[in-house]
Length: 147
Image 1 (cartoon, rainbow, N blue to C red):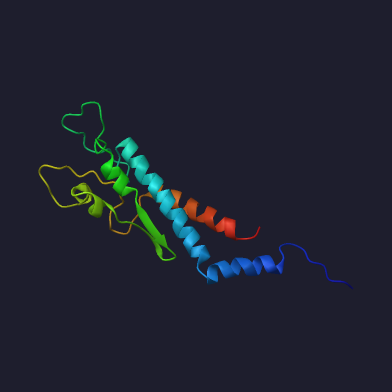
Image 2: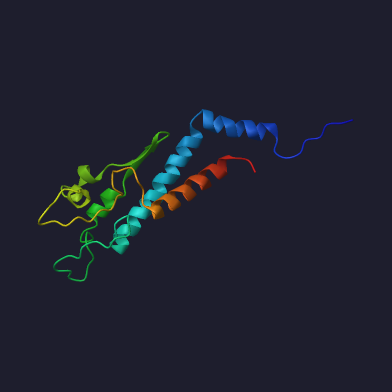
């Protein structure tokens, strides 16, 4: 009787487990989620839509442009993220603009309408975002796991 190997080698399986132990898998997933999130935010600016899919309030004097697109500063700030094995954060809006948080805020206002570009902070992602982010995480993990 002889033993034969079939399927994935033990070394490949151990290397995949090492990726989880040393944080590479977590960083890969966080990076993939951040990039997917960045694309979702960018799409929101392109389509003038909130993460929920609701259309943003139009600007009073459009002059051929969409809301929040005059200089590109706010969108540029909204696309800046940092990530680690613990997750990712879009954190440059308040640092790079003086007005971005007003569009995101749920506080009542009279002059500047709410035009959110990030999901609400209630912990619930819109369904479309959940699907895209889950697919991004799956793809990142698939690159690390043997087949």
